[in-house]
Length: 278
Image 1 (cartoon, rainbow, N blue to C red):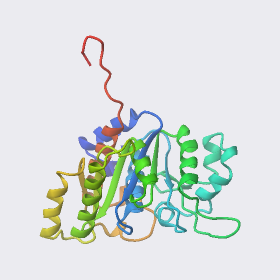
Image 2 (cartoon, one colour; image 1 turned 180 degrees about the vertical axis):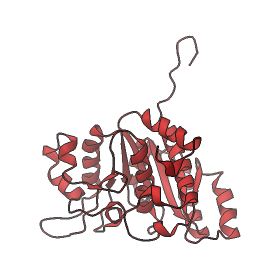
Image 3 (cartoon, rainbow, N blue to C red; image 1 turned 90 degrees about the horizontal axis):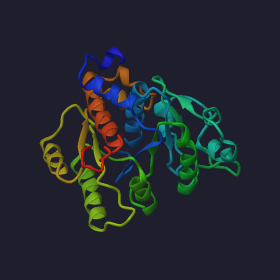
């Protein structure tokens, strides 16, 4: 366990849970709005989990727009999710996948979004990105999925099938309330593809949390499965690779709490014997 996350207690709990993580877990991350810090959360949480999980952890950018959000937060490189899609029939091992991944400072791997749009390359659409994810996840204990906004049916289907679903909001009343309205609506029209209530992650944009934001966060606690505020951190506010070890102490603590919650939800359900004892 890196000394930046010590001493014992919550950090040890996270590292023990990460060591026992079952294979093929999928953490799907979406939002009700754009520009709320979704890729930042994927990269920051992924950076921490890459340190804690004994095997490699990979993040996949499933945004169908030409942009480099996740790639900028992980590290430099030329490969993208488009390359993995193009080579999909020939992806037969982790080594094949990792020809196209970028590697972050703490070891997080990422299939970054495609930034070129031409007759030769383009960002995969939603179905194509999911085809890549289904192949990739067979070789990794944990895949983090950076999805588009959760306002289309396909995204909610992925959230429903994920081991854990996160919704990200910015720490403003409007952004949090938009996420809560989306959660409330989806629960009201439950379908086989409606996920269990997602965890809400709220990213602060300034060192001070206004009173109206605190009030909406209290409201959110009764709607989301859990609420995890991420405090303002200047290192999360720049488009550069994220190393969880270098973040402020309060940010590291918030990410540890989020990681502990995610890993708890990823754990297999306890088995029940025929005599009723677990």
